[in-house]
Image (cartoon, rainbow, N blue to C red; front, side, top):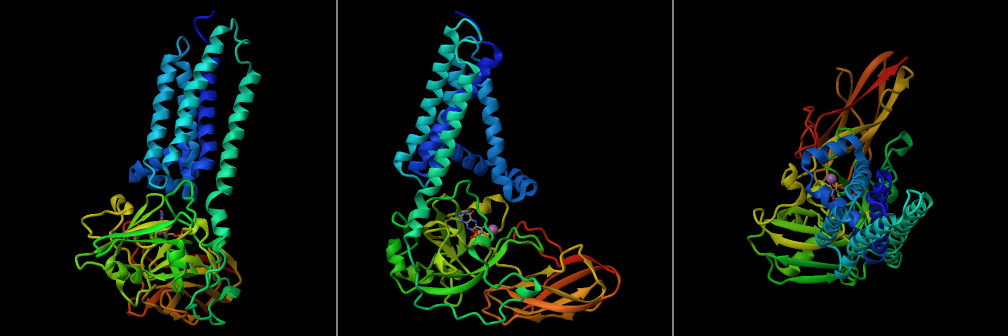
Length: 503
Ligand SMILES: Nc1nc2c(c(=O)[nH]1)N[C@H]1C(S)=C(S)[C@@H](COP(=O)(O)O)O[C@H]1N2
Ligand SMILES: [Mo]
């Protein structure tokens, strides 16, 4: 019998045990709900409790890959801790077991905190806890019985165990993704609106000149949310509960909603995090029901100020009740997007859409709960992270062609782009070369006041370097400000401009 394990061997035992444990939980999560995977649940919890400077740093540094970066970072931390658990157990297994046990329990707690899982989901993190402790004990015991380093678990044994854990984790990922919501979504079939959106005019975009198409294909529609793993909610299981300051609590099933006369509306959504000139804006036709009708059936009490909505993933959102109840606003509970059931990543089975408000205060995806309440009673997710309570979309415009820093032939040059002032309507767009006069652009026909408009103008560009600016004027007479403001707390302002060089 030996009295102390070699360092490498001890560390490897920790790493293999923890890897197998995480993989076991991830594999089971394929059957118990994606978010029951302890790795995913811990990641979500870390993201939730991260101070805002850290999440902002993550977003600025890794942009849309911030969640992947979080996962990779977590993986590295986990492996290091696993190796440490092994290293402190060179003489006795107890310290390592305590180490792994504590982390296993954290995984259980993280999964228990998830609001979107059934009771059975606890099995996944429990399996992680048991596999972690069991595997560690077993490997440790075997290693101790052997005389030499080459005995116990050979290098080959470790490789096989590692590969096994990898296969289990990947299988969990693949099976988990293929089950759940996609299958349910494929069975929905058509969502036929009783009141379809009017057909688009022939000149709804200038995509031939390089603007986006008027409707953004679902695959290209911008996507923003805080979830690590997409919530997997099946239409069969989905319920929408309406409660709070109402006369009667109501609960709707998917069939309850889809059997009502559906309305279709074209709406441009945009994100408060969209930088000047940014890409976080898209347009779709949404099919659903008027939110105000559902709330009227529940009977909204006069004290109500806020519609506080909750997603299946626990994310929350506060919308002014006045906007939701305004008959002219067109606030919707949407089931469909561009002629299909909502894609899973855009909120299947159901989401909110409130024209004219940034997504973070209006567009709850995977919505499961509507609580009618006051501002003081409930604070939504982004409110505690430095963003403002109300988020009307700011009138803005963007240049899409020429591309920045493009080399241009001097002379007549087409400049084209988009402008938006949801719910107010874009009145006109003006373009300026360097410090010259503002020149009016030609706009597309307006589809409705809640959608973007495309524009183009021809400039006469002399040789040399230039800056091209654009600004929109909306129907209220507001001229898009050139004052530069950051996205925090309620949306960026400033003129979008691009540098070009003509020769
Ligand atoms: N459940 C949930 N819904 C959410 C969010 C979220 O993080 N979680 N983000 C909101 C934000 S900030 C925006 S801009 C829109 C984006 O909707 P999209 O991803 O369909 O474009 O969704 C909103 N709905
Ligand atoms: Mo957003």
